[in-house]
Image 1 (cartoon, one colour):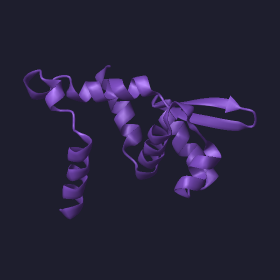
Image 2 (cartoon, rainbow, N blue to C red):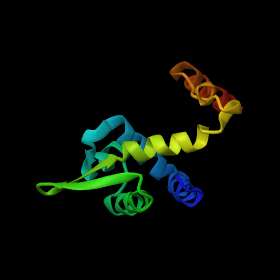
Image 3 (tube, rainbow, N blue to C red):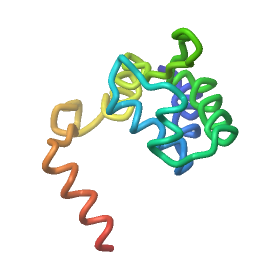
Amino acid sequence: MTDSLAVRAFGALAQDTRLAVYRRLVEAGPAGLSAGAIAEALDVPAPTLSFHLAQLRGAGLITQRRDSRSLIYAVDVALMNTLIGFLSDRCCGGQPDLCLPTPKSASDARSRRKAV
C-alpha cells in the first residue's frame, strides 16, 4: 500500500459519521447492509448517509452492489487488512505480532481514553 492510498483511507475515516458507518459495516461482515438499514441503525438522514457512503467508496474502503431495489454496502476486508498491515508492518523492531491488540487490551485502551 502506498502512503497516498493510506492517507486517502484514513482521511475518509477521520469523520464521526463515516467512522460509525464503517464500524457498522465491519460488524455486518461480507454480507453488508442496505443503505436503509445503515441509516436506521445510525439515525442518519438518507442524503447525509449517501454523501458519507460516497466518501468511503471513493477511498476504496467499502463496496456497493445492487440487490433488487436496494444498494448493499460492505467493507472491503482485503483493503482493511492491508491498511492494518500498513500501520503495523514496521512495528516493534520488526515484530508486528507485538503490535496487534487483544480484544481485552483494545477495550482497556478505549476505557483509558474515555477516562482522560
